[in-house]
Image 1 (cartoon, one colour):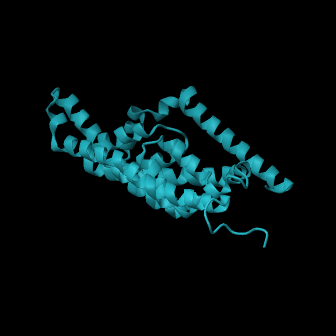
Image 2 (cartoon, helix red, strand yellow):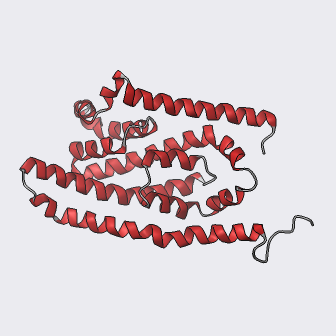
Image 3 (cartoon, helix red, strand yellow):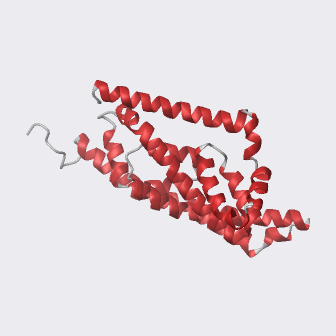
Length: 247
C-alpha cells in the first residue's frame, strides 16, 4: 500500500496515461488526421525519403505503435516498400523498438498505480513474473495476444525491461517472418492474378513456423506457471519452506 502522497502521484500519472491512450486512439481513428496514417499516405512519404526511408520507417513504427496505429499497417508497408527480406528486417527492428517505447510509457506512468491495485495479496504473482520475466513475455508474445495492448500492459507489471526486450525481440522475430512471408505471397498473387505464389516454399515455411509457434506456448507454459505457482504455494503455506513472519 502506497503512502497518501505517493498514491496521489501514482494516481495522477495513471490518469495521464489514460488520457494519453484516449487521445492517441481518438487522433488516429476519429479525426481528420487519420488520413495521414494509412498505408498509402505513409508509402508516398517514405518513397520520397529515398535512402532515409528504412530509418524513417523504423522511427515511424516506434512512434505509430505508441499511438495505436495497427501493427498490420506497418507490416504491409514494410513488405511493399522494401520487399520480403529487407522488409522483414525493418519490420522486426521497428516492432521491437515500438514495443520498448510503449513499455516504457506504461511503466513510467502506470506501474505505481498498478502496484497499488495489486496489493500485498497478489504481489507474489507480480514477483513471480519478475523472476521469470523472459519466459513469461515469450509465452505471451507467442500466444499472439494483441501487440499494442501487450506492450503497454506488460509495462504495468514487475517484469524487468531487459527480460521484456530480449523475449520480445525473439518472439517478434518469429512473428515478423511468418507474416511478412504471408503478406508478400498475397501481394505477388494479387499482382500476378494467380494463386501459384500461395503454394511457394515461403508460404509453406511460414505455415510450418506458425504451426510450430502455436505449440511453443504450451511447452513454455510449464516453465512459466510452475515456478510462479510453487512460489505462491510457499508463501501461502501449502508446502514446507514458507518464511515465518512471526520470527
